[in-house]
Length: 94
Image (cartoon, rainbow, N blue to C red; front, side, top):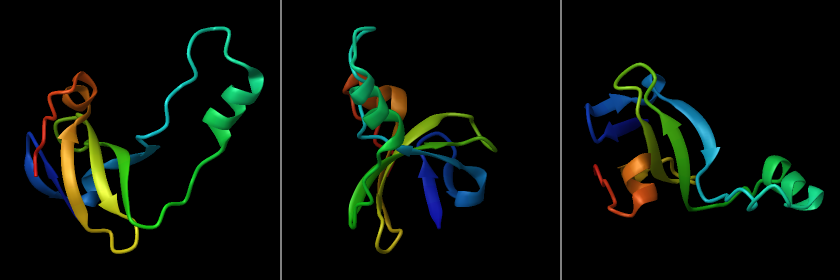
């Protein structure tokens, strides 16, 4: 599998570390219920099809990325700088 880093170009997936689901959102504030925190930390979906994931380019520019990957075929559909994606400007590096 190859991932196109927006900063370094196309690289082998071995240069990257997988963190997990980029669609999960931490429950708000210190008053979050124990049940909500349990769900956030331990429960994960196993989607079939396009899924947004966090990847870290540890052997390259050390940037966090949001990779949209088809879990059935491992095809990379889109890659964005995680900081840019969180700020809403996309940072798309297809």
